[in-house]
Image (tube, rainbow, N blue to C red; front, top):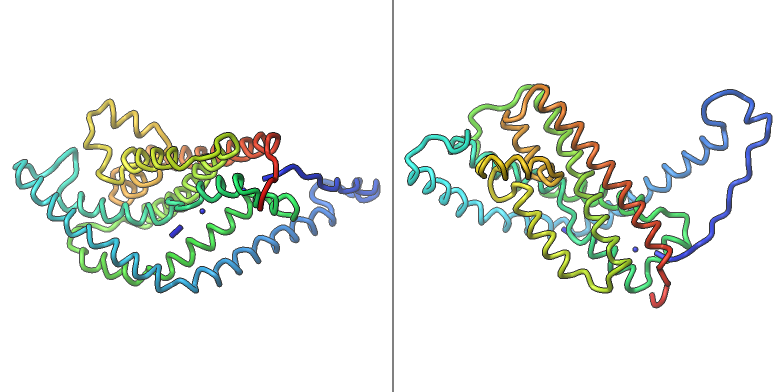
Length: 305
């Protein structure tokens, strides 16, 4: 699975004629045509990327199957932990819920992980190939968002079978399935996890405007992210202070939050508030990425590429 700038001038569209402007509130015909043109443009990007990604469906399938192998070790490990503790629950999680959580985290990360995105932006800045987004009528962030939507669609479609088989074999760990509203909240949390994951990675990639090499930074960020997002274990297992601190950060929405929603650990007002905060973090990171992009353009020189 696995991821861009230069100074440019763009023509300023002529002001609409007075008669059209006075036609009343709402979008004028020219603005509607412009919106349709933009929608068609990014729809084509998604379609072309889907064709490209489905070319590697065998690779998606194989890497997904191989990624499941460590789950056997994880299941045996938590069986030993619960047996050694002599307790039926740890921080409110039974053994079945713990295994179910670790399985669900794979789904969370399927949506939120953006391998290669930040590195790709930094590389395009360094190599000068970022200028293609300035010479063409494309938004860097818009293009990358469309590309990742297509990439995730292809990945989910090609890995549905192995994931379905894994969850079928481990169905005994899911003692109770969520009701309809919880299902809807879970799906929404996954979609918002994609938004948060994409926008955060884009922000990290924009650092390439100020640093020539970001490999070490990306390694540190990804390593910390793996822990603080709840990928390794539920954040509830940490002491209350640290659990509360990490839950106040946006990274929990990349892994912990969707899985906890599915298991019914977050309900009622807490669930609604959590979804709203998750959406707010996604928008905030998108705005930050756009701001960093505009600032980076001021110091960008398109050498090479």
